[in-house]
Length: 266
Image (cartoon, rainbow, N blue to C red):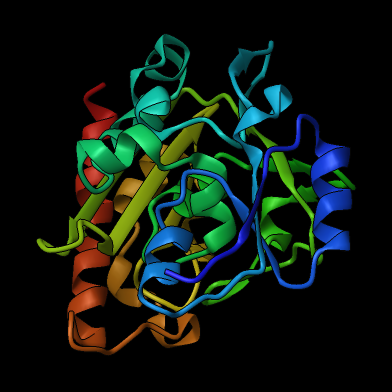
């Protein structure tokens, strides 16, 4: 591993100023992506800026109609939070199935989101839960955040402080995952609020997407909707060594049906 300078800022402004002053800096959250990349010679930062000492990026807070999670909330903290389990059980279930326990202990919500892996689980939840992302510079609606594979709308050096999710009446996450990595080949997050449905898909394309055809349909109508009528070509479904585009479309349909059935019986 190449040498680098290590920094531990105590607040967002200090971290941001450090980033701007360094030659080739990288932020460190849980380290689940950047540290293996450095070890394999895929990244060579001059400086690592460890965000874990910034208190305002930790914690889960419940509000009247929403829940705010700090960017440094770990996967296990999401999975084991009573607030999340009781108010958004689909998100707790999602977090409990990420990778293995070692990764869940260190990997963070914010780190996963900012990495924007097209097969990551959280983006589907954020879309279906109408998330708002707060950085050190501004607020970003989730629909404007994920741009493409490993690409977000974050500015250079911008830090994701926290994520605010809407409370919903029901939520569910189903995925068909790679047995090696546990990443989603297809993941479907379904939420229902005031009997209206939102369905988002991860793993199937270069970025997460909302299924427009089901968006804001009443649950009964969504259950009756003929998924075979959807033109999935407009979503640019991936065709790769893990699954063909046709197989992914079949998985999407099956997981949606299972999700809606599951929500109906809650």
